Image 1 (cartoon, rainbow, N blue to C red):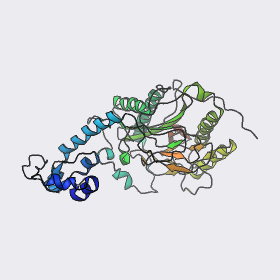
Image 2: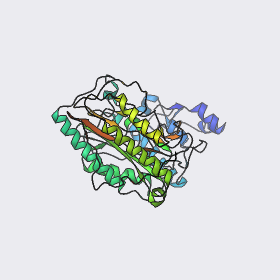
Image 3: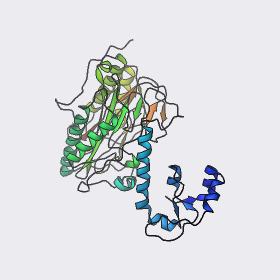
Image 4: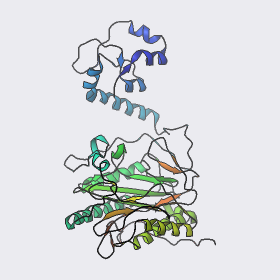
Length: 402
């Protein structure tokens, strides 16, 4: 971040008062260990926070002092958040359903340095993943397969721990806290954290939110449904699993919520059932969409499954809709996810201004389920499979009208 010229910004904000203030005498540079007089350069973040006297003598001095100076911003933001209380950060945006963001977001949760971090933990950029060949699919040896089994077992444990906390009255930020703690206890890094600058340790997507919902201060209500999308990085390998859950008894008695959740759950199960050596990737989408349509539901085609191993999203890409042109076939040693998103209404989506959250354009509810799987010599091993003790689980689906 670079400082901006004060004159143009201050005149726009305060008119001639800035000129009067600047004529009162020389200002001291706020740079660390700098005793020079300040020029007309002011920190742009301070300007946004309403601080009008953070001047620096040069851009070089500002950059040198950035590590220390940014602590001022954090302190001011905390004060502002405490004054404002919960608020909608996008008051002019048209939200399509019942879910609105409730800020402020809690500070980013830290992962101990003793835990292996992926390459995006600091920069937000998955550089290794971005350099991968788009059609080269890794075949894991026996050692790598064992590492995948271990991290996927941890992922199942973590999603079960978080799901056990689901009830009306809790916030999605609390669920993020639970997830983060459970990951760290297993010496695992929560893979979403800072991936392309995502600010949290899991994705929470209630009701009409298609995917990538950011945990915040929104309270879950009796009758909501919510998807928990959890990913871990441990021992150099990633795991990915998600499920959609009922919140409270009202959700479990709502026929439409039951229809979308159980349709999506069964669509994933049916897709997994065809996985074996030689199965074309394109057949997966055909199975998913056929069942979704039979239940008068719609596949959202934007989002697909993906390879997963030492990288978070390597090849292959798995389409969840029919008539796709994905090339390739399943081979023993491949690990990838299948994770269909299905909706009660239209497949059209809108993106929130947070650059992550996607919602259905018609406000209809969606559900998603995901497993990480390993192709074996004879079929498939679901590495993130539920256990008999896992919270949630299927309930009887209401009959579909002819």
